[in-house]
Image (cartoon, rainbow, N blue to C red; front, side, top):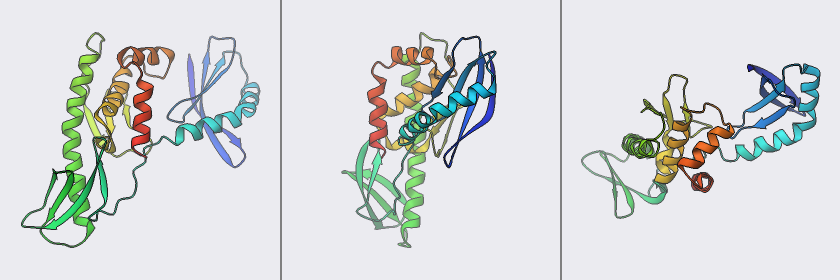
Length: 238
């Protein structure tokens, strides 16, 4: 199989980028993956004229699929970090309460995020304190999630990856060629089962690098009904 990336298709005022794979097959396949990437699998003897013609005929469908998957990109509402505002943690909403005190702290207590600041200079201090708290909790919760998911995959040849946490615009998680698992910081706002779904998804990529039928068969075996969990993640973070 020979993969070539960097191809583009013009459709109206839109540019569709796609990767082209030449395979030992008789028919052409056009697929739009959940991350909105487009893959074209073509027979070894297929010319570019034929490929571009097929793509042009399917362009409307491709755009429709990209728009569908695009609506599920991570969405974090703009926050002002003022008292009375609600914030998510592990799938639950908590109201924010900011008070002045002798130290800068964040506590989750009695259904509230209680943020104590040494001064009341505005929302910037509260915002930085909350983000620091979220990152600390993400490190704890993501480690616990990885522990749980590795147990589920103990019958498969997967290894514990190094985990990186950062804010990502279009993905909940990814697995690098070197095996590093990167998780979106905003996942800490999602329910635990949704975090486990993303972690398991990326662990499965150790065995199946692409989103092939083998990959989804593996995911089905480890998380039966994962589609419902994925849908809950998408809805809970809008």
